[in-house]
Image 1 (cartoon, rainbow, N blue to C red):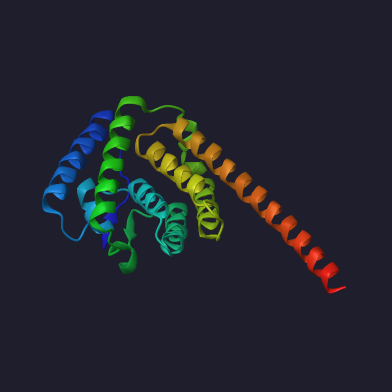
Image 2 (cartoon, rainbow, N blue to C red):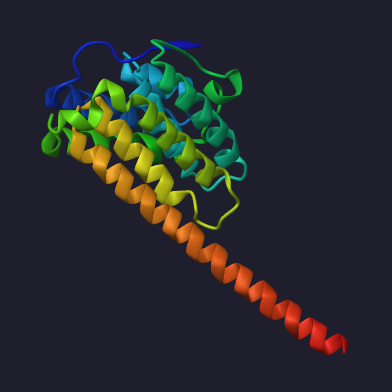
Length: 220
């Protein structure tokens, strides 16, 4: 499956609100039909013209699902996307396993509802600003940031994928609507996620050392 990368000007607020209405209609249809649920391919089709920013948001949102192994699959997909982002590729080839990933009916409705709310809020509050944050020379740096957050998502840290995933959603929205403030928010969320990972790792390591000391004393 191939999708086009962003070309030309970013969509306007009106485009974001149109997407919100489209997803609300899709949610109504999904509730009425039931069925097997949606795949990533179906969600991309609802976007019409799917950009690299759209893929970034969808990959990150899928990483939030409480399903075993999803973070690993989409963490790898995010690494591939970061490489394509760095090279400025205009054609993105989705791995078959990623494109065919299917949600059940419940999570399909949750995804449609969440995307409708996200696009409605984006259309009302986000606007083009701070273009220097999205200048062409920053592209490799943002690609590195995506790869770093994908690594944090991939690591087996309890709830460690939440802040990095929201960080990448913010970056995708900022890129989609040319809002540099959202890109800065992405940095803040990602930094908090790494602080959380470091703090949890340090506490875990100290507890492990304490338990090892207790066992050593018990063994005499």
